[in-house]
Image 1 (cartoon, rainbow, N blue to C red):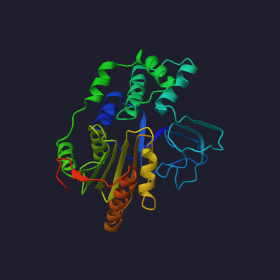
Image 2 (image 1 turned 135 degrees about the horizontal axis):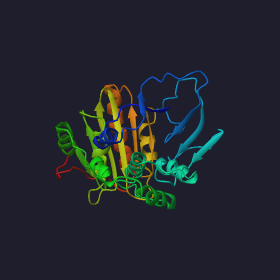
Image 3 (image 1 turned 135 degrees about the vertical axis):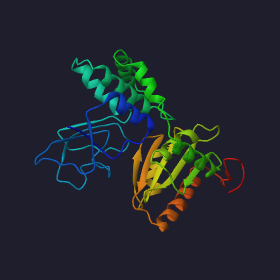
Image 4 (image 1 turned 30 degrees about the vertical axis):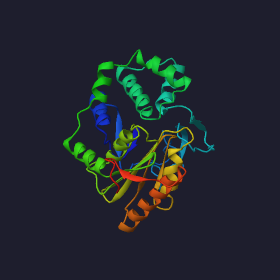
Length: 288
């Protein structure tokens, strides 16, 4: 069984599911059979949001590329933080076993690698480059174009306008805190957009959604770690993690006082990221 938790929210990802019809079960409460063996992919056991937490099921293997994964006492652990995508690792298994992927699977794997190398997360290892070239022989470029240009809802543009109105610049960092968002994908997509701004090297975007606070962090400088910044910012409030230049997190069931504390802590974390007193202004140049 290929099982995933949560919802698929990004327009591109929803389009991928529609076009490629992967055999993926999205579940909230897995009905594990007694003695089930679980393999975690693109997620480590130390993460706080995967489907095994709170259940009497132990992973027998982990295949992951995220930062911060510790060495695990498991029958099989393949942890490659210098690899751009877990899709690359999965593709390498296929090639090693001389298994040719079908058109749908090859397209999905190429899309997965390209998604993980978007924004400032542009590092490709030798294996990433090799697997992209190999998979491209079998992938459908027309499907990839459809996925990457998926139609966007009107609510998406409402969120985008609100986000730009609530973005403030602190020297080379951008801080965007939204009182609400129509969809959970907003924080990540706004962060991806802001980090492309000229002279912006760090971004933190947060939004209230269904009683939670969702957070996305982006960094551009090689010396920065988005994963560490989001963990430090949310310590004691929620959980988060990710990559060197792209990370996210959540404050579950956030009450009003937690929201205020998160905003204060966010501002302090951003201010510590560079020398001198930050000069705050919103995205139009006006002071907040």
